[in-house]
Length: 295
Picture 1 (cartoon, one colour):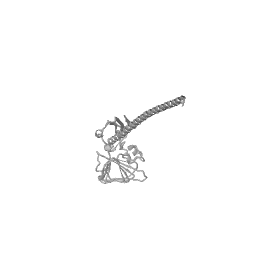
Picture 2 (tube, one colour):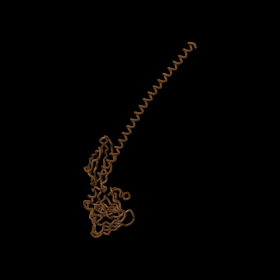
Picture 3 (cartoon, rainbow, N blue to C red):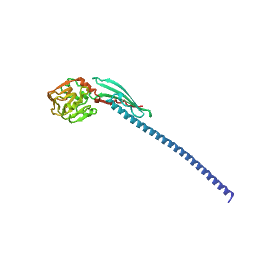
Picture 4 (tube, rainbow, N blue to C red):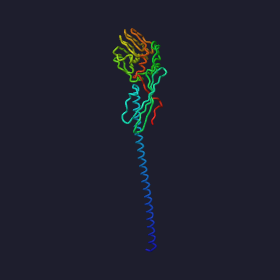
């Protein structure tokens, strides 16, 4: 082989080595870039997971605080702020109360409730209004004559829209036997009341009974203290019977003319009706629209 052939072979081998070195260099660069991108992607994924876990934990805390806030509001329907128990764990709460007097002398309470998680540094707040289910106290005129719009005056509901579920914790029934303590007794059908049915009621704790589409009878020597309302939604003529010695102290109201058999007596009492309106069990509480916030 000539010297020229050896030179050509050496040149070819050198060229191949150089290309090989270039390829190895490119592979190393690509591997380095891949490792960098993999690390960056891994860090990005980890960051995403950390953020997602943080958001999930924050949402869980926010949900728990919301439940605590609503529990407090539910208790405020019948309980004063100073009697609301502390929340367990690292959750704290505060209640600011403002007493208001409405147009028709209704007693209202506005509450600003906050609940906070100390460890998560989250605070939720919302305002609530407590008001009586018996919005207006019936007048003596309403107690002496029937009125087709009586439910609108008392409860701001048309008779077709008013149900027992408008009231907090109602006692829904089809007769007036064995009446226990309740915010309201909503009776569909005939109602016969004797002294045993109302022995837990008095002028300091009057009753609200609403009888829909039924006859009403107060047995002999039975004293009812509170508000007794009759609602008729059918053409039937219903009867109000007060036996000898029976009495209604407070008011009796009806949306229609009744057949009356009155051997007892009826005594209008604004004092008893006011006590009934302010009775804790007859209070309702609702959130004030737009007042919820988180910080």
